[in-house]
Amino acid sequence: MKKILIPILFGAALLAVSCSQALENPQKGVSSMDNFYQSDADALAARTDMYVNFVGSVAGTSGIYNPELMILNYSADDILAAGGNSEDHGDFRIFCEFRYDAAAGALKNFYNNYITAIFHSNLVISNFTTENRNGTEPKWHSDYTEQYVAEARVMRAYCHLMMALSWNCPNIVDRLLEADELPRQATSQSEVLEWVISECQKALDCKFLPVRKDINDKNSTAIMTRGFAQFVAGKAAVFNNDMATARKYLGALREEGKYKLVKSEDFWTNFHRAGDGNEETIFEPNFIEDPAFTSSGFTAMFRGRWMVANTLCWRTSNLASVPTVCEKITTSGGGWNGGAVQEDFAKKFVEHDGDSPRRRACFLTEEEFLYEMDWSGSAVNNGTRAEKEADPNRGIKNTSGIYSHGPYFEWKHMVYHKVPKILAGDNEYPADNINDLGSNSNQTNYGVARYAEALLLYAEACIGSGDEQKGLDALNEVQRRSGSGKISSKLTFDDVMEEKQYEMWFENCRFHDLVRWSKTHPDKVNLDKVFNQSGIHERIPTVYDAFFTNGEAKHRFYTQYTKAHYNNFQVGLHEYFPFPRDIMGANPELKNVLGWAE
Image (tube, rainbow, N blue to C red; front, side, top):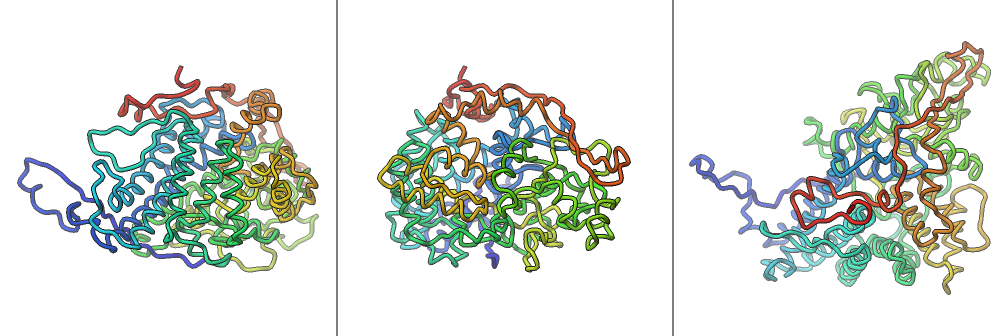
């Protein structure tokens, strides 16, 4: 995808009061609020600021992790925290092991990222409409301001949706607040979801909201569009258990034909630079290549999810040499082994999908890891199987093994320094990383919404309705593309639930889905059984290579098990997160709900 160069324009004024005469001098390069928001150029600057902020906050990095990606996925039942040992990556490991509380720093970052994005959306809405404290008329109005306001509504609605799914009853911040105001907390999750749907509808009613031209229109995937508004409204309706409304929005999204699943063999590209803006993308904030920031490292560190690349790479220091797929990671401290695929789920995935392109894009088996990849230190990458089996430059050399792993090696979100042949064949694709931006930077766009999720949400919304055949067709689209070989003949909740886990693994969906399904289908999803009775924290694997540990003639992986330091999942407590302690301290009217309220 051709990257879009967007300058960072900060339109908000910096107002200061000081006794110092020096500080009373006019600041150069700073616009006054009184002189801003009164032209199309100002509106464009505010809109640009909104998108750039989203890239740096919701899609960006806090230390060595992305809060949304780590917290939501580590809270699910099919991913383990991994790391070097049971104490590593503590900031976000606590979400995998349910040891967090309101003081968790990662939780505060997670919350603040959405709030910051909402604020920058409200800068557009409140300054170019009457939706402000006093109902003041905007200084400027045009077709452009109508478009940008519609886009801001959709972004603001998305952030509120994610907050409702994560905190149940967040504040609804529907305009810029003055210094003496506090936001109003919703009385229920349903209130937030209904508001999200209404905001999306307002945006859809605007004739200037951008519309994707066709499946080849890449530029529209990096902005708020009609398709994304339909997606957000439809997803909110599903979580509100309003399936008729969900069918309305998601059905329209499907029928308009602006999106399409990529080919089965190209499934992997959805998560790598080769697939940025492809036909399946509904929204992904665009990674911005701006040479002005390259020398300072800003682009690589923040827009490229700095050091998340290390976290979501294999423990390269424990390997005999570095696989060429991630060969440059050694220049930035190596890989740190985060986000391991849970062993029982991996086995189930292999049984269901076999060698499907979908499964191979998510993780590798022992055989694939050892023998179907090139290793940078190996002299027999083109050799025979027997030569590879006895090759001392591949496999797990460190006798401490690799923690949290069975014989499966996830790479769905790994930075590809060289696209592996196991996925690409002999075709040429761009790598996920550019040398001059740092080997631990990921220039892949951050995925927010893709068409496969929309199809699965729609299929679920059609169960038991007059649109069952349409829902079955949507489910079958995903199944056929997967390469698993399974094609459902009836539309059932079990099949939709199963397909959703495989298709959307490690994509921020599973935890929210489990909580929702436990309420709408308690006979199918029991959270105590999923998290506690399954024993997933009682048997944490560490995988070893007998070639190195036992001196065997061939590579052979085996696992040993230990117990994690964890708390049991408590229904009513861990279904949603507590509001961060600092946030509640600043807003005494904000109250925790359900188990956290006690």
